[in-house]
Image 1 (cartoon, chains in turn blue, yellow):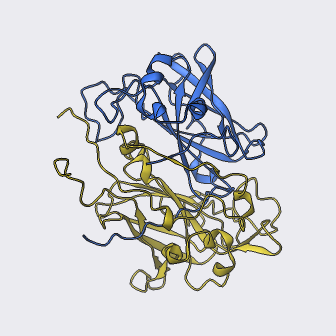
Image 2 (cartoon, one colour):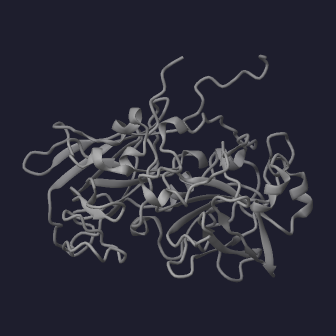
Image 3 (tube, chains in turn cyan, red):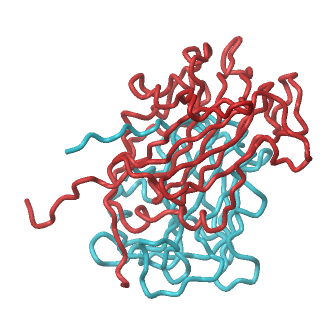
Length: 190
Length: 241
């Protein structure tokens, strides 16, 4: 077997990443009035439950019919014009709140030939974070699909809730990312 | 062709990356997970990623010495930084967005949060750029050598000169943000962010001076390759126990 080249080590984005890694509007994947539009907002909280005021959140998701805009997903499902499935948001320096405007993704295949519950992949980075953390946003109004989801089922019951965005108003969800403590958000390695 | 392709990416080599909590870099202590990461089987959600779609909507912007549009060149030591984005199997990754940001020659970021370091701003330098890799995975920027700057981590703390690099790569798990350092910088061994990487992997973050890249009467050249996770070279045969 051939020797692998060593992976370049991860480093923090530092405090100045908004120079390049966030531009106005990158957190808005669909405009108001778009069918199926949802809003997800929340905060990223540190081990003292203080808001992290300089976090970068990146989402990756399928479109509303469950297709990823990616060459490895050639399934015959419609792609929405202009919808990439990628978004970036930053936490507000004063309030610590982030906000995405997107659509709820459709279901995508799981590792055993069934379908996963609707979910959005989320990468969180920030000053003071030497590696990105990877998590998933599920939805509180998808109880039945969540119950069958292979990845949620594989988690300790007490930690599943950390991945479920709560529907707080019509089409508006809250999802906080928590570091440390019993209620820490589940972070994945894959 | 309508079946999704599920690639088998090798693991993130955590032994080659910094730990989440590295107390010498103080801010990591409260901003790091304390539970173990939970290992999951890769699905289409992990083996796809935003890289290709991000490439579709991104444009090249590779000359940081002129990209403010003022018509005047930035001040400082002009340099060329070039190299390849590769996966760990040695395959160049074409059509990949490489985003960079950095301070100016005085070590000052053109960012509203930088209010304490009394170094001059350069109206002709913002310090941001992006490149799309070519069919060999190659990228190339012309920029100004960034200056070192102080930070509040500990008394008399200075960051060595560095350029921030951000790469999506082909899948969710290939996401990498890192920093490129310059050879011979005496601040490197004093820097807790550099030192957060394990000793055997630290040199992978330091560019090499390359006289072949240097352009006569124009700019010094540095070469630096970036290595991302790759597909497992020998995927397991499903029929083989």
